[in-house]
Image (cartoon, rainbow, N blue to C red; front, side, top):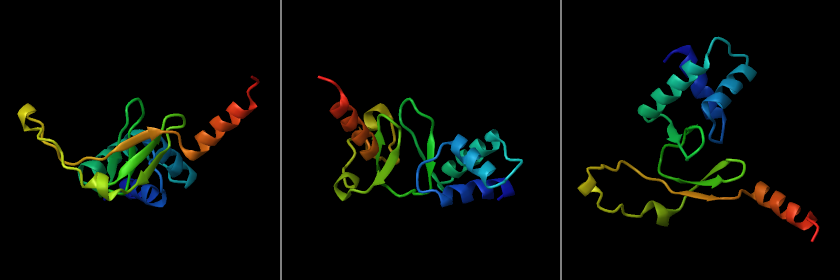
Amino acid sequence: MTLQRRAVLEVLLARDDHPTADQVVEDLAARGVSGVSRATVFRALELFAERGIVARVCHPGAAARYEVRTHRHHHLVCDVCGKITDFDDDALSALQLPDLGSGGFRARDFSVHVRGLCADCAREQDHELRNEEP
């Protein structure tokens, strides 16, 4: 474990959201950690993901996000601000995957992403609708 990798992991452990590589770089700079390039951060995050230390959370049209929760859980994804919130649901987690063998695909795990509006964006949208002139 290099000093740079340790610093990246410490940033992830201190956060409770799903940061991008750029947000990790910003946190490192805010902590006064120098000499860690964006490329180094990205490589460290990818290495951690490959080894199961962190999980990569991806959703279409956005940068990969990373989190330290690696057990099966699900995500609420805001269509407006991109915020990702974890949630656990035993019923969703217990879903059985369909037989995918005919196409040669081997499922390793799954999570459900529910898309919509986070509470802040929903409030803002409601506020804007109330203030529109008829």
